[in-house]
Image (cartoon, rainbow, N blue to C red; front, side):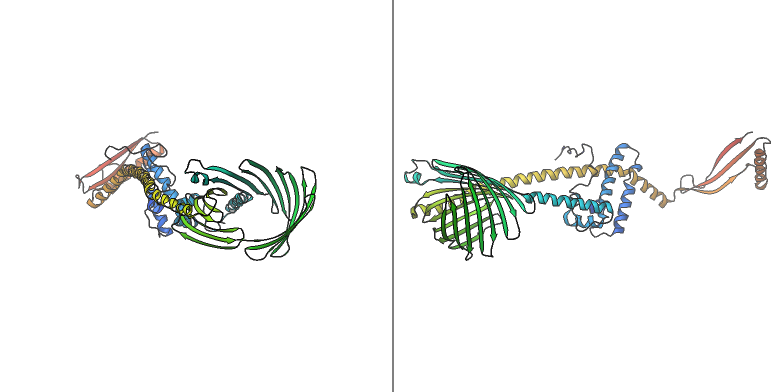
Length: 506
């Protein structure tokens, strides 16, 4: 690093900013241990403040460095001298102090009480706003590759269907909720879409009322109510207006949850589109085995046996960021073999099922499991691992560069403080050496009066002349003699007479 020029500081000057650096240890800044008492903190602060006070340095450049360091020491003492802030700093560092974290009530003055209440109000309002609005969407893209496999890839895989839906739910009040959504469905050569608006009101703990407006292929307006008759029985009744023919229809349904996976329902419809039906829905038997390989990846085997069929799903998912994940699954059952790719981020979900065979064929099912497994293993070893190493090396370089910048900043600051403290240390060392060698000036006597005569007469004449001069009679001279002795110096034993004369005239 020879010849390297230290980078400029954040404020563009030769020193650091006066605010507390996020990487600075406040205890080290005050030269105390982490278990220092309040008296030790106060003593260290006073000592450092007396050393780095800007008024003690005559040159402007030194004053700037001293002022910067003095402000940092004062900021550190303000944090550590406050018990609440000190606890926050010990737990979360300076980031917790800057962000305003607190460990308990901060109720010392009215102003602090009001500020704490206003912060709590803002947090509650932000939480309410986040809870009132919920957005979710899903996309299902159906792809078939059965014809491509059967023809030896002379044909390309094709999209056979697509379904997209999205909705936004907003809480208007504690009892009222508004839902806006839409959906689009496309299957082979036919398709359609609709927009839905739902206003829901919670009448009481057991009953709700809804107004549903649907605009699309079947435009209609429905007013319905639902009531939880018992913990396992729910009843629904509603009236629907159909825009295509202007007719009305009434609907009533009763649903009973027999077991955890089985429900029975009775549906009755009256009007131009009347219907009567009864059914039994059952989820059948399910079994799931989940193995977590690491903090970010997991594998799953899921089996289902029910009235609609039987299938086994094998696959895994990996968390690729804090809010998103990517999964790949192979489903084999009576309805055929298919791949399923799933991506989710927050409330958004995208699913792409790829049909490999409309029937269960081992010649398709076995490669359908082996090919993704081998591909993932190769990519993980040769691509993902290398990419991870490159990313970690880049992060290490960034950390080293950042650390080098901080080291140079600290070195420059240390040199500035050293230059600033050199005169102070020199003066203290000189004074200490003088005290040790006895080289000092001592006043041994102080006299006043006219020199040359006897002691008593000279003093009386001096007093008389001074009195006469004070009365305005004549002029006089007052001579002040200070006798000092240089002890321990070159002129040891020599008396120095310092005379100060002042003529007094009328």
